[in-house]
Image (cartoon, rainbow, N blue to C red):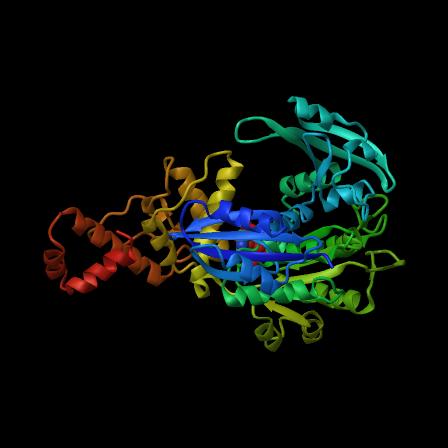
Length: 526
Ligand SMILES: Nc1ncnc2c1ncn2[C@@H]1O[C@H](COP(=O)(O)OP(=O)(O)OP(=O)(O)O)[C@@H](O)[C@H]1O
């Protein structure tokens, strides 16, 4: 029976090994199918495959033959040779591409046809490798012209396939060897629908996915994986977390992952007066009140249709609208103000708040029954100060976002700038970090973003800081006592360091130890 054997031989490095192997095997009537040589550490590794003919070599007889070659140190039989492993991984890469790839050799015979090309051309299961390109039904055979040096880039084309009309951008180029000789040609076809989808997702900022939620902290990752798990259900989700922690970002990502057909419709319950809230949420019938539109107006529940309604700051919803919201959620029906028709609700409800609803229930500011309705699946988003390790990731992300938006070259943050960011308390959470980074990037020159351009809101409030009797002019809204003291301390240290005395003298003057002063200098990124 015909047999294929794959081997690895290890030799002490010397000249003439390959000649020895070839002539010895030929003398014994054994054919070499493939051979690969690799030299390393004064050893020569030879990988090869032999196909035995009539005189099929047994493993033992092959070993006996090979053992005659001088300097052979080791023989191993292999399942797969290195070049086969490389080809397999190359094939996996090609087959996982969303573009169709066809390659031909010098004679115009097909050498590569990846999964996407097979699918589009309805060639699955057909063995076309090695066959002429002209055997395939294609809109044209321009690829053959690439063998004469022609090439095209991103040309729009379309043709009818058994699966419908396929519109694509094609790029076709000759393949050249190291000396520049044409040894084949390759075509890459990009599906136009995929390109359109990609363009939409880049240009449409509302298309937020979980990939846009940056952070590696376990608590954040847990929140993301829980949100991903429940995104596809119809249940009400309650997002809990301080202001600026990313609740709206999560809501949008959940909506995107839910694959719901309708829109994402947000409403900030704190931003509207009570009189307007109900008409916004539930809409009104024609002539419901003076000034109303003649034909009435659909509310946000109706507008969201099969999508998602995001009730932001639900803790700020007054008690009146709370009762109506509860009824709507319970009955899955809304009635426009002044109307009689009941309209079914198909939208998914996501709520968010930074307030303690539990405390509000206790103080009778929030209805207990509504609380239980909306708090079925709570997701807690941790504040930034509890996940400081995410600060560098987020800072780089916002810097990259800004520079790409402004069409500027990518930038990085200096070590000192990063240090300053990591040591801030972040009362405003991720939103504050985003603002700080954008401000720093705009303020500074080109090149890395420096620490002196990292300005927190309390620093902005005191542009004319002076030492002496005047305290920093930060007001209560802008910073807490801790921040004000930190700022005052920093101002004193900056002033003292400017005098260029030694750290030790400065420490003595300040009445603190040398190490305490060093720690403080480090803390303030001075
Ligand atoms: N993990 C994150 N990754 C990337 N960007 C984030 C993240 N968290 C928040 N952001 C960004 O920070 C800003 C504030 O986030 P968002 O508006 O979602 O917060 P919020 O919790 O809804 O705030 P509020 O309670 O004030 O309504 C947005 O620009 C958002 O894109």
